[in-house]
Length: 341
Ligand code: 5MM
Image 1 (cartoon, rainbow, N blue to C red):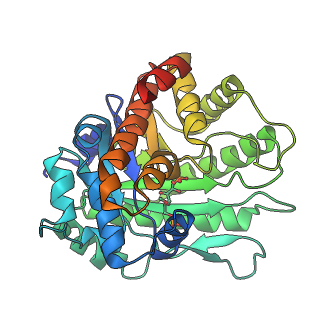
Image 2 (spheres, rainbow, N blue to C red):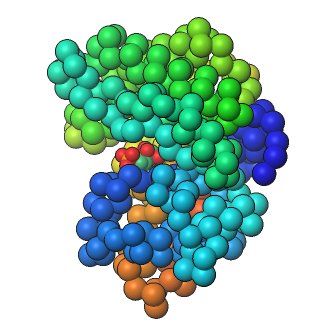
Image 3 (cartoon, rainbow, N blue to C red):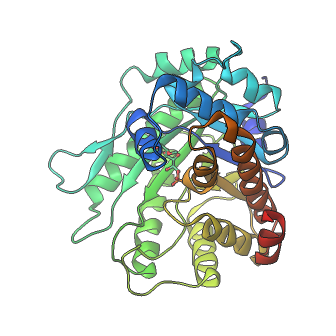
């Protein structure tokens, strides 16, 4: 698949389409499979992902690109077709997670630094040859007592910027993902404050690293209260605060912003995106790059049984369509109920 960095970055987030984050590492996919009583074998992981990538309507009409894991980008379908070719045949763009995970940061108790820069240039060249046209690197920032610290935010922002520079040098669009977790007991305003701090630092480091903003995609968290906060927020408050934070931090040269779902329920993730689009006046395309919020339902419907493939695909199509409608500002709870029936 040819195309310049700018064209690919634009296409990833345009027209209501969004990204499927299917890049669970082996330990994460094992957790997901444990929850549905499926053993995490090479064959089961292939069958599950093949089911998703062969879902015609979802892949052709709603999913602009798929983030893959190292195993999956090298894996073939049961009939021998590379999984990457299934994605391309649907007109969707294959991408690859290239970070090697968030590891405890020495000297910073409770904080992590994402690793994977060593040898990255060579790996990107190989992934390009395998078909990847974009990549993803996730930095993880937790909110807690005394954290995050500036030392950790800076180290993670610099790593994101160095990763993005290597991607662009290899003609691969970098998805820059600084995730502020929603696991704590903090309120929504603390999430706003930390996310603003992180995004300001990330864009400063992207500038120092000479990143072409037109050729990248941002994958941020939404501004939400921590899951353990006694004070939860309305859909309107989440939408208004997220858009305000992004407008204050993200230059309009960035063509697209694709949110992570971060542990929100499927419907919350959809409703929040829809409400943001309905606010209007946005300088970038906003869309989804969900992992859990796109896959939890099809995983459950499939449950590892070949006879459930059609049911898994129907549920995946529904979720992808709901998020596509949300990215166009055309979703409603009524549409959600009517079309699920
Ligand atoms: C699909 O989950 C991705 C992989 O996570 P691990 O490297 O920890 O296995 C994850 O990076 C994902 O792309 C984003 O966090 C968004 O996923 P959610 O589930 O938050 O939408």
